[in-house]
Image (cartoon, each protein chain N blue to C red):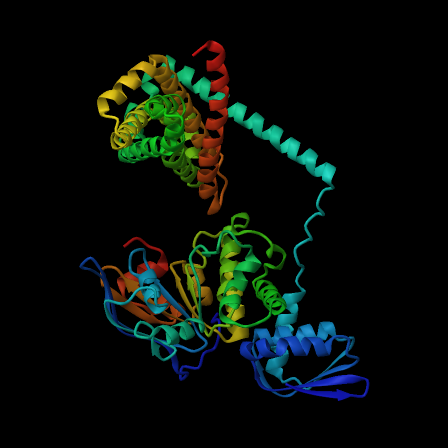
Length: 362
Length: 257
């Protein structure tokens, strides 16, 4: 590109081929120089060919200049310019509506939140109705499906649960040994770890495992079925998707959770026992301390909570799947909201249980 | 009506030398020899399972042939080192069957992906160029939409716009009219013809849509599952009227064999 200042204006001469690579190097200088030039003379006498990037550059220069004179473009160059000009002139998408004022945004958020609560309540109602329907006609319940979910959510999580439980018990015992030693209260570590595990950490950790492994897979599986129109196919066949897809999964999650929590409790106690042994407390003394401090209702309360967490995580996972939208991100989004929703709901429920159990004197 | 008038003497841009494909010991096709000339619309046709899409994958470098060579723009696409292969791939464009648009990006952003990766154009230039490409396929007003929000025909056109982003010398189209209604399909045919005429791009089109083959094809080869290879080559209109091969006749007359 050759730049020649002329009386009151500017002449840009191009030669040879104007292709993407040259356009990339010329773009900044050419557009700066051409801005407001009056007139801009585009000398294309020696220009042999140009690709669409070249055409876009020349047309952009024309837009920037106050006035443009085209000097001797060849027929092929002219045709390319005309095509690109027509393509650029096609109507562009309408500008998005301006954002709402703050007050409006607050209102919109409240409305959305309200809608969310209503659709969730509607889903819950649907599940209750389906459950009642299945109770009346038990053969509609897909027992084999339940077995599959018990296998995947329960047996499949066995190794992970034991590993996490042992590590959790060891960590709790080891971390509490230092502060307890200052009071000479190391012999109370089994009481501390035992109660925390049975009442809180067992069910909570089991819920995290279930939400991460099973809740997300429920959402992904059902979400994929929604995207493939399989759920619509069920509806059209007169099969209730809630009974067909949701009930076996939720029941599976509910049955599996107390077992996972119990497994976590036991392997946690084992891990704690291992650490206590290294601190000089033989297994028999640990067992005696546990027998003194733990009551049956600590265990039962924890396992009951676990079952409720299971129902919640199962429901949230299935709902996230059924509410999946279209597009490639829909399934991923459904899985994410299943895990996040499941864990948040579990922690909130756990808080409610803490109050209830306290009032009930457990 | 022929789409373009390619000189029969123009040098071939694609050459298939004795190409073969097999999956798990089962031969799909073998001994495939053909040339694609510069500037023509070349159609690969055949019934389901005859290996059309497999051949396309071999030509664009996704699937190595089990025997033979695929020479694209004078180079064996499967024998190149990484850098020349990248350079060669920038000279071809591919529209996949359902567009294969990146779902998390708008149409304009989709078209800008090759520009961002392979050119040093500034952002303003990339935006304008993407706008021009979308304009060429008639999607200017949908530039800000996501692939999930557009119809199948629009997704294919956007796929063509993205494939054209770098002004390729050869455009490969996989089943451009499959799954489209007759009107949209005819509009797409008209677009392909217009692009071939205006830009001088060579098109390689894989399809089994009869109407589309006759509307756009300058030359075609027909593959057949039972023959494990090519059973006809030539002008599709000529094959329709004069072929004596029973399968070719059945295909063009839409008859059961």
